[in-house]
Structure formats: structure tokens, C-alpha cells
Length: 108
Image (cartoon, rainbow, N blue to C red; front, top):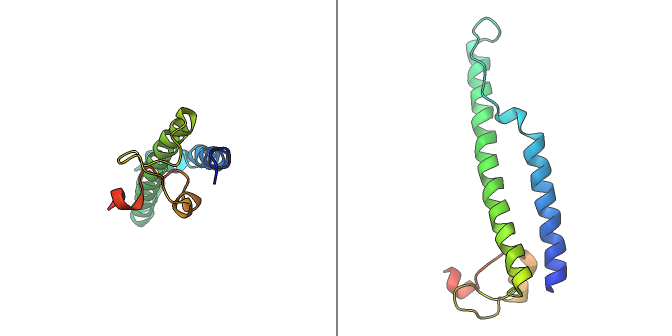
């Protein structure tokens, strides 16, 4: 995989994650605890769903940071090289995830 292909894949994933963030914004909003409007079990369910959405959003945010770092490496001409040992990352590893920053040896 070359840098142009990786960049396209990463930009597409970045756009998808950003779209998902916008779509799930309401689900992450604070849950109203009005006992007149909702029963106790419904409130617990709503809080649980909100917590799951917040955790998902945190993982999305982490992935966006990883993608951003990978795009910066592409711009700097460092795509495909381990950030620790500066050796080439295997093409199979890059094909699986073009955002990886380390070779298999340094990852372990």
C-alpha cells in the first residue's frame, strides 16, 4: 500500500467517525431524571445507554487521534516506517491498518 492509498483510506475513516460523532451527540446528552416523566427502570436504561455512548465516543476520539497522527506521518514522508526503530512496517500490517505507527517487533 502506498501513501496515497493509505491517505484516502484514513481520510474516509476520519469522515465516517466524525459523522458518527455528530449523529450520536444526542445519545451522549445528560439524562433527565424527572420521576414524573419516566419510570425508575427507564431512567436506569437511559443512563446505561448514555454511558455506553460515552465510552464509544471515547474510543472514536482515540481512533481520530491515531488517524490524525498517521496523516501527519504521511505528510512528513514517514509513512510505512516504525516510529520507534525507523524500520519499514510490513505491507500486510499496513494493509490491515494504515494508521499503525510501529512494526510488529516494537509493538510487543
